Image (cartoon, rainbow, N blue to C red; front, top):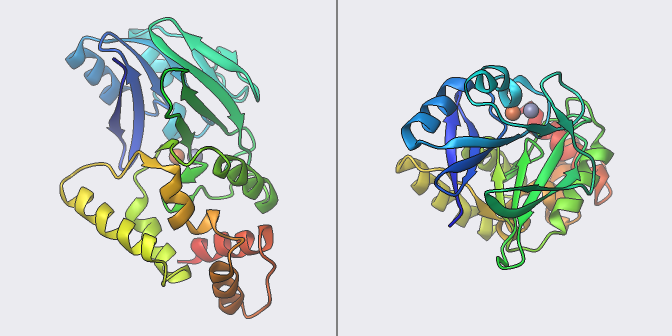
Length: 258
Ligand code: ZN
Ligand code: FE
């Protein structure tokens, strides 16, 4: 039986632990202490570490973690702690976890950003570990890539089956919804997601994972080809914008301003 748990680190990061009760695959361990405490408390061993990109809040805990819990590290080539560099289309397998982890390169937030799509033949639901590329009702800031790169990356993710469960690296949902409601105020699915997310946070629960189908209906960055977003962004910047990357670039800049 495979379980996926969120280990909170820093203010709002989640390290996703995919485990069978004995061994765990850890995604983006930015901080060692909470992970070591979790491994201790559960009696589990780290089987592998997966990294989505080189930012400190995603890799900062690896060196210390390896001192106590040696495990192979997979991730983009950038960053000294990576022991195995991964590439687009590569599929990773791990002994204890009967899932394939397919690498999807998603440049934009950083140029080296990758996502991992996990699944197996028996399970009709895939799970997307998307780091800082896709957030619930938001997306990562463009630190290194261009709007066109990020738009292409998000568009690829949006083509995955709607049942795909999205595991983002941050709990940014409510902040993202506050902005999304400015850009897309009449979206009933967004209003429903807002109510559900408020309820979850009130109970101290994560708003993740979330099915991709919900993001398609709610996330303004996945809706930049739709009239509502094109019109809203065009009005905000007082210039006509084209659907697609043009609108995406404007909505991303708009988000950075609030
Ligand atoms: Zn980042
Ligand atoms: Fe981050």
